[in-house]
View 1 (cartoon, rainbow, N blue to C red):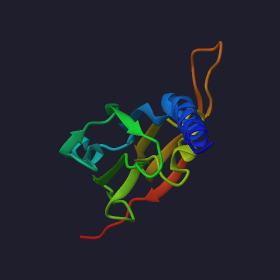
View 2: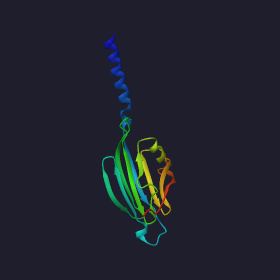
View 3: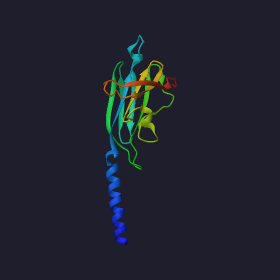
View 4: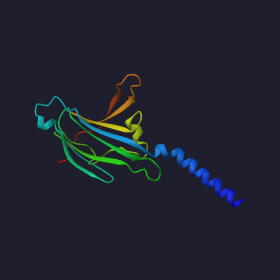
Length: 160
C-alpha cells in the first residue's frame, strides 16, 4: 500500500505541474512613450529614461516627443520564482517623478492587473503634467484598436 500511495502522489504532482506549465512563463511587453507637447523647446520636451530589470541595467536613453521605446521579455510567474520586474528613473524638462525609481512592470502583488486587460503588457506615457500608466480597459476584440484610460501616477517635481 505504501508504494501505491507514493505512485499516486507522483502522478498527481506530474498532472498539476503539467496543468500549470503554460502559465509559468509568458511574454511580457513594456512600452514607454513620450507625449509631451505644447512646448516651444524640443530640449524641454525630451524624456530621459534609465531602466533596469532584475538582471540587466538597460542604461540611459533619450526619448524624443512622439517616440517610444519597447522591450519584450519572458516573465516567470510561478511562486516562489515570481521575479520579473522592471524599474525606471525618469527625467524631463519639467522635473522628475515623485519616487526616484518607479516600478513599471512586475509579476508580483497584482501589479499586472493595474496595466489592464491581459496584464502582460504595460504602457507608460510622459505628458506635460506628469507620468501616466495607460491602462487597457478593452482589448479590441473584433475591432483591432484597444481602448484605454490614462491614470496619472506621478506629477513632475523638482528635486535638484
